[in-house]
Length: 115
Image (tube, rainbow, N blue to C red; front, side, top):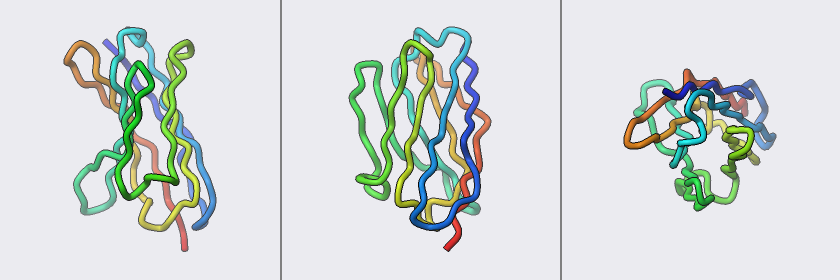
């Protein structure tokens, strides 16, 4: 079992930055792939960024060059540094963990970017 708790969301103006965190507890040392997803009102949940236990990363085209995903495997924390935020980044952001083929989700944290 893995529990995921996101934090760091909030209300910012366009162009500003935020850093999201996702703390993993339970069998966190067994986590392989971790992702950040987001879901805007009326839209499907979309993949934002991925990081493996070996620190390979991948980003959606919409955030490439602005967002950075990272993880601390000692503290079992996943991060998403979001720079140059745009109003279209407004969404609930979720972290996801894959552990031996089982998927775990956090509860989400709201990010709102005003123009």
